[in-house]
Amino acid sequence: MSTSMGKKLGAEFIGTFWLVLGGCGSAVLAAAFPDVGIGLLGVSLAFGLTVLTMAYAVGHLSGCHLNPAVSVGLVTGGRFPASELIPYVVVQVLGGIAGAAVLFVIASGQAGFETAGFASNGFGEHSPGGYSLTAALVTEVVMTFMFLIIILGATDARAPAALAPVAIGLGLTLIHLISIPVTNTSVNPARSTGVALFEGGWAISQLWLFWVAPIVGAALAGLVYNWLGSED
Image: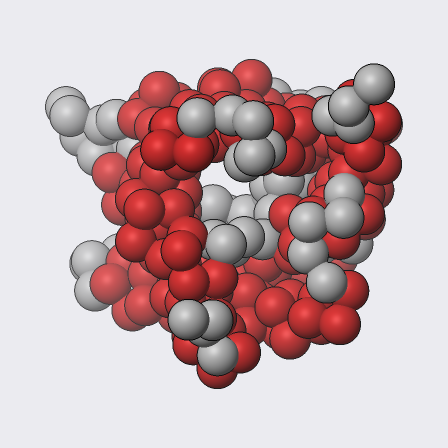
């Protein structure tokens, strides 16, 4: 029995909500917590775990994209109908905003709360490691490219289906371990948009890069996997 579009979109909304609340929440609420802060490794694992858990929870309903760039890559890779792309992107962004809104309400309940970046993505002076626009652009394109190669390969009909969420979740964890120092890791325009709206200012002015670079990287990966995964 096929899943209705409404249920697919509901699954994408909930999944993206969880990704932003869980991943960005780990950075905002737990990463710098006195004495027991989870640090870079903990935040990286949190993002990977959000995708891993949602892949098992809603993957059978919507495909568990949770990311406009993933949806684009699946379109160029021939795995997802272009006619469904815009509705998916809209609910992913709305889910990301909802996740950021809940996180903001929770975080602002602490005395002396300041957004302090609010897990936003940035380059230049807003890069955690002070990396340039060029470095950020290359990082986001390449990391999203590799993320889509992992997704397309792990979900290939010839791959062991039950293990696909594990590979994808661990892939996202590795991507964060590599690129948090450069851009605070986006590879997901919905994740970037949600928190940027609450940080405002510089985060919104730099948001364009975290739409353009992930979508370019994902689209290229879809085209490459069309060749790489084709049977000779």
